[in-house]
Length: 400
Image (cartoon, rainbow, N blue to C red):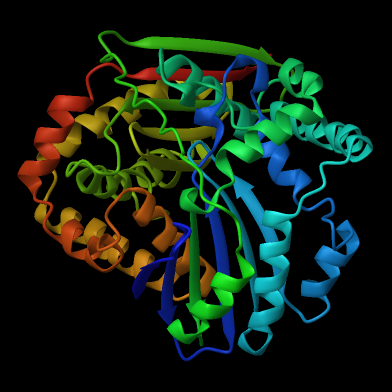
């Protein structure tokens, strides 16, 4: 893996592999955390618009140029970044580079298309609100955080999205879609000899980029709960805690804890809730670690009559972490090692992993992540549980 910085400030990451494919991911270091109330959802909406036509290609041409050769083109937006990616056979690298550089540099932001796509985005918001498996996380982050922008959903609000104008897109694009705020990550049968092509493809002019002010979120000093009742056949639970950003050394301990509690059918919670008692079908845990915030949570889907039992079991299993056996610790670490290495055999996953760690300011962690996880001890787990797992936030979407 090699890192280059072009004259215009764009970061280029290249990892050569003897594979048939090549993955190109262009990450812009801007997401929903950079928005204010009047433009909530703009990062995500703008991502949609970049596929809706350029000065050189229609929306259909953008998709067809990649899909007609068996490739994949797509994008996603989260709190801190917006990423656009193409995966093709490596012999089509030049075409893929041309397409992704075109959509990034030459969007038209046609007003009629903005109004058309607005309907799609609003429908997406309604769709996610209707889905309790997604909506539970929106409720959780909103209750967990008091100051940080991550308490707002990435897709924004209906009011804000409904009011966005073409000038909002142009201002946001001009401010953040600049080369010195971008990372181009490439993985596959390609090496640094493509750098002149990349420099020629991306002719954007650098501009000063104002960094987002880091937020110091107040500590959780009491437990909180929220119950939302719906006409459903099932109830959904999230129980979680504030944790640490990805740059904090304790983040690796949280990875291990997540693995112990909810890595799959062999996890503690799956065994206690589903295998032994048959109280739920869906059981798991998630750890989210970003630039200046983090959280960890357990989620369960169950019948409402099981809610008190499940809450008790989850809280007990959290406390049992203080007495985690060496065998369970090693199992959790081995899972993380296997999951990380196997998933990153996929070229796009590796390209994304490289982009994420570069945003975090520690690209070396691409290769050192497993080493750091393996250094987590039983004492580390106990210390972290004592320090962070004090005041849970409890969300229930309850069937009526």
